[in-house]
Length: 358
Ligand code: GLY
Image (tube, rainbow, N blue to C red):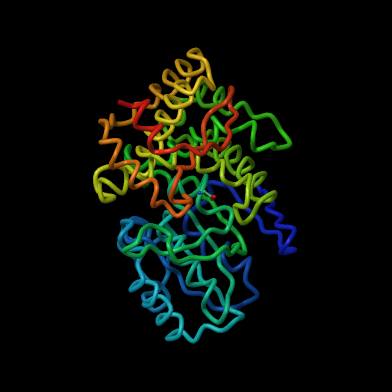
């Protein structure tokens, strides 16, 4: 078992991220270790409930089953979860537990952060994407018609409990969407300023076979590296005032792809990978990196065999990127590679984008 601490100094709050591959039937017992005898409501992904419902053993009365898909992260389901919490008479001594991917963690975390002005939240991520990224760092949210994560809060969990056995539930495409975020960490590793030098890109290249086999030891080592990198960033900048923005590497263009295709055609990871490739192209056009680093990045990404995404109309993409909640409405904020495994923030005008991508 690996136990990592996230220490958010401003909040004077430390919480553990546990990484292990224990029997799934022990999950309830593990949740109870973090609660002082209080009650809890479980928000669980429908897919995980179907596959592991019996082993997990939660009763109908204590679990809220959330259908899968980004569109379920909506106001109506948020309201239903709060109603469920009231029906269970949860008090401030009680907790909400999320078991599922990023959608479940985000909506359950947001419900926990607002129910009675905040009750304990335990996150049990079951997808690779949630294990390496969304479960750590306290971002919670729901989507509205204006876009993704429009209403939300920063709310750190009481504990994050990762069991790599859950990763076996992922099909190839869903597993790879998590690898999109993992690859992002490889390209930003130096900025994270973690205490250790992981050389994540090397780890990925040397272990690719075992990663695709979802080997428990390899996966827990991989998740450990990514979580340590993420902890190093969020401990320095919880609220994304500066450093945390590097976690958006590949996301400016990636989010626009998701939006233009109505979140239906590509997974988040596929869109992020395309966004990373776009960032490399842009950095080369701007002479920030040389062609050797771009070739290295292209070859490295090819090993993971992501679905190809065709080019989009740049004028439309620019318009979407300008309406991103992180944009000032005039220029588009990109995180671009500047050197091996280092990135920096750049403001780029839509006119410049059009001129270099025609
Ligand atoms: N997923 C990016 C962040 O947590 O800031």
